[in-house]
Image 1 (cartoon, rainbow, N blue to C red):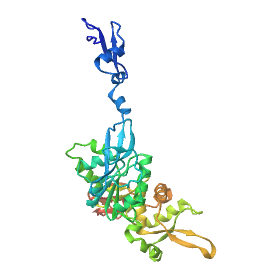
Image 2: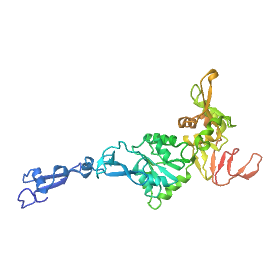
Image 3: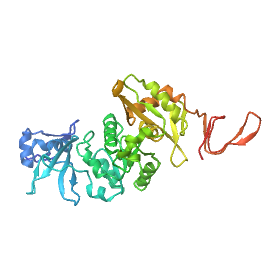
Length: 382
């Protein structure tokens, strides 16, 4: 109870409490109107509601992210409002704002640092980019969120080593695919970091002590297989002559060609390229040779581009044209799920981190060498 400011209150008569929805409840037991009480306090009814609700209706953003040109000159901002709503605005030249980005050059977030760095992380959203920037990892994103990547952004990253941290949801994975396809032939290298058990890189970083967060992210990047693609490895001018190489040639599915047949043909070639199967999953020894990576669709596509030629046939009769094509991620995912592919890979019954003794059929006991032993179905990874 408190003294009511709306009347000469000699004994406290103003009841103050909190409602279930967080609003402040005022009631003068002497009968004063609530508006009169608020007026005497210099307040309005709006002030009785929680701050979060006031922010939702506020014209002021809770966060503003600057997009600048190469010199650091502000071009536009992406503003976040509560609830999670994003709007864009540009300076009007008079210390005010124009609430659109019409006729403004679109650029990557954190552009000056991106230009200077050889390695750049790509995330979905400014919050995630800042999470990496705060631990001294150069990162960027595009305004507008998932599905808004532009090819001119990839030109900014031409010749750079790119590490992509995709969100673990359907829009995030579609965005990741769009970014990879746009960067193909432009970035010097591409890595796609898998954040197992985390929605995004911000969650991954937040789950670790501040002192070790950068080390954990660096380890993720180091252990991620680099994606090489047809254009990156050969250059666009070399693609037409690729069909003349001695690499095995496999027709892509579609136009009457079954995915199962394509998967079987892929297995015939790739089973000798260090791919193994265990428990219905295909995996490969990592680049460091000290661990295993489950093969993703993108990784399979990379391996295919290194060891075989995929092609499509167009036309009919005398007008048939054979065109070299990169396997799509959808086709690659289909191959990884196909029994026709998995059943043809070398089977692994056990994985060893040290050379184990094994008895051969002739009774001789010997230590297994590093790598795959077909007789015992053992893969030794030191």
